[in-house]
Image: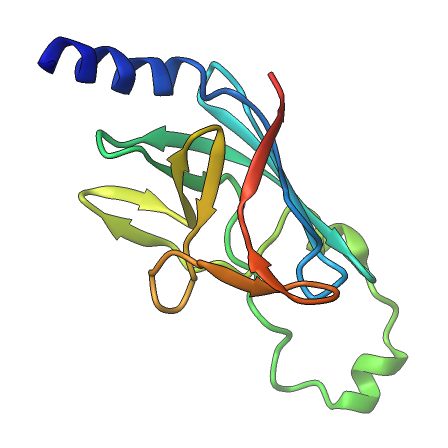
Amino acid sequence: MLILLLFVSCNTNRNFCGTYRSNFAQLGFFVTQIKFNADSTVKFNKAGDLMNEDLKGKFKISRNNIVYIEFDKLKYNDAPDTLSLTELMEKPIDTNQFQNMHLYDLKFENGIPYHLKYKIKHNKLLVYNIQTGKIVRRSKGSKNTAKFYLKKIAN
């Protein structure tokens, strides 16, 4: 029995790499897609409405099948307080300064730095709530409340 358990846990990590996507658009707008590569790099995309977040980074899988993602770029700091709303509205926006930036805080768990984490379960990624650290069991969708996860769509 112990050998079977060891084989199943190793098999989960070996078959883990690939592309995962939200099973439905959160709030009717936002779809998350994550591609995990065999070299422990990751491409993260969250898009919807007027937002498109493209990030790159690295990932690590813990013994209890939690995948930790740490992005390459730093967290974006808000515009300086010295500018008024009118000045910000009139000032041309340099979109290059916002590329590959994010709003996720760097956290640590068991000595592992991460911005986002997911639980691996049956070719799905269960999503952890950023504020509470608990797995999101249900999330509001476009029509109803449903189980929310990211499903593997390609190797």
